[in-house]
Amino acid sequence: MQRILKKIVIISMGSLLLLQPSVVFSATKPLLNSEMIQNKYGSYGVKVLKKTPTLRVSKLYSTHDGKEIARTLAFVIFPKVIDERVREEHVLITEKSQSIGSTFKQRGWIVQKQNRYFGMRPEIPKNVRQLMGGIEDQPLVLHIYELSVEQEGKKIHYCTIAELHHPDYLTTKKLKKIYGKHTEISAPHTISLDEILKLVDAELEKITVLFQEAKFDFQAEKATITKNGKVVRYIGTMSDENVQRLLKETEGQKIKKLIISSSGGETCSAIEFGFWVAKNKIDVDVERACLSSCANYVFPAAKKKKIYQHAVVAWHGNMRQKDLLSEVELKKYAQEMFKSMPADERKLLGNSNALFQKMKTHTEFCRTREDEFFKLVGVDEYVCRIGNEKYDAQGFFFMSKNDMEHFGIKNISMPKNYEKTNLDEFRKRAPFDFIRLQH
Image 1: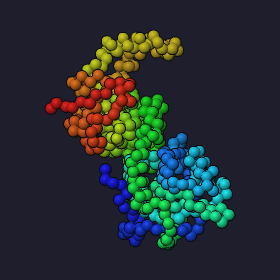
Image 2: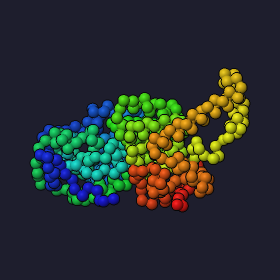
Image 3: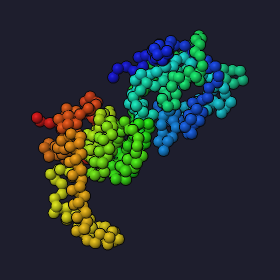
Image 4: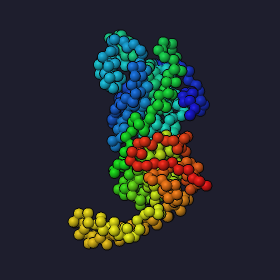
């Protein structure tokens, strides 16, 4: 990946101008980030993602439907030696993970920001966009400033801060409005602008939502469904209840992208999920895993498909697989299942044959819907079972981009060396084999 933050730009009179390193003062004292986020979104929190003696990386977030959405990613660079006059505040900030601005304000300090740089960051890593609620790939404003505190006429430089802002929270235009006209002044800095940009570049690439931030319970019975603009994030299994909830919450809306982590689920429900993706021409990003029915029906239905680093798309059969229960086996299964049902449910059904007929009708319906689905998306259903039936895969199997394309699954973006993806976490539950087609 090309080095990020090669340049920062601002938009002026329709042209791109480089903004030279400078320190500017605000015409009026702006609110703290904590205050602005609280005022705009009704909630505020801070969570530290990384901490060293000279660096703190944190997200400043608001909460929506139980989900934390990062409004600002803050990279705080501390001097090697902390002024003793702010030692107590520094301990609260670094050891107790408290907000910088709020901590100083509550203890009677006046917080001052001296701007050094702000402009548009042209390329945003996917993990950062995930922290911000799954926003689309777009330039974000980066703001760099020195933070000082003052009390009883004594001013102390505390740290250097670089902040990357959510587009709904702060833009270049909004920052200009807050800080007024830029005025160059000379001032000593503890770290050069180039060093700051390189540091931010490196730290952004290290942010790994999959392992450091989000909890991917892709086997959750109750799926977590969140929406941010035209992007939907779905984590959990695909039951009828979950899929119907998804359809209801997105009804009448133009959804462009689905970010998903799912272990699969009920066949018919997953097929309807796939129809929704295909008919609405939705792009699908696999955040951690798309297994079983998710791989069968959601992934191939997408207009564009992306598999994130450390993620996997894997199959293990469908409604046409050879080892699907025969009618005799299904009837025997229905008899055993009927015996284990609660008395009131057995009374409602009457006998095991009624249960068998119900299961048989459902199986036939799902098989018909599956045929209709694969015809709609132009994909060979054999992709769902070839690993088990031809290559002796004992559980799940996954394959290369070229082999997926062989079955009609196109417009795929995936990491290099995808076949070497570390699946130790998954293999604790079931076998996962990489297969390569023998043409």
